[in-house]
Image 1: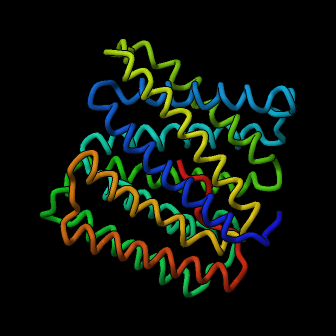
Image 2: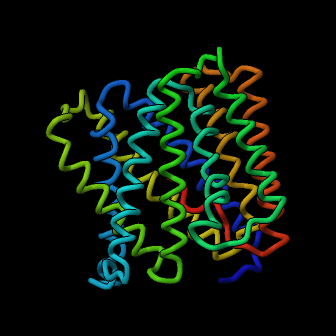
Image 3: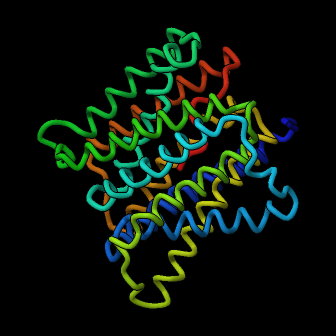
Length: 296
């Protein structure tokens, strides 16, 4: 790692979270016309195909060699279940609020890091966890527009993403990030391919087909940007900037879907951002590994 160029890392991480928000918005748009399974299938097939084209000629079969196949399978299943739940939720709820709910995943990981990973959780991190949960409660509040069974899809996605991150941390140092991302993409492709016949629908026109391919390219580019960002800057430096995805989600949600979060949603999103900044400060102080890894 060359951590002497933090501004390069910050620039790359901002590009990554912008593409993550854009991919979610594109998925939300396409699910207005096509089943979620079909949209995700194209995303994963394009993602895996591009990775195979880019890395197999250089790495060969070593790309799929893993020391923990069991964890890789669990990681891949968590990846596809997270996206199925999250994109299904986005079909019904606004982009900014849905993104804010999924961002409680790092807080859940913090709460579970001691029993599952044996890591010490500081007082500041526990404070951040509870502050973040308060933010989610404000967004999904009784009497609010999101207080419906659909919100459970987003919460389920956040829990699945938390397990995904815990398994990712277990695999850290065991397999390379390229191997993990490739295997997860292949598993997700296989799972969605198996159920695709029940949901297949021909694209209405060439434009929709281009958008689906663009979704896969965007998803892959976002992961590559994020991975590259950590070559230039420390995780504790980059962590606060990952929350820029919430800002991008709000802007894209307004521009594409005309949605403006109400004051309670804005308050909840702000509180979640504050909790994330506290977490980042705690990580920087204690030199811990990042809790937010590999967004989907």
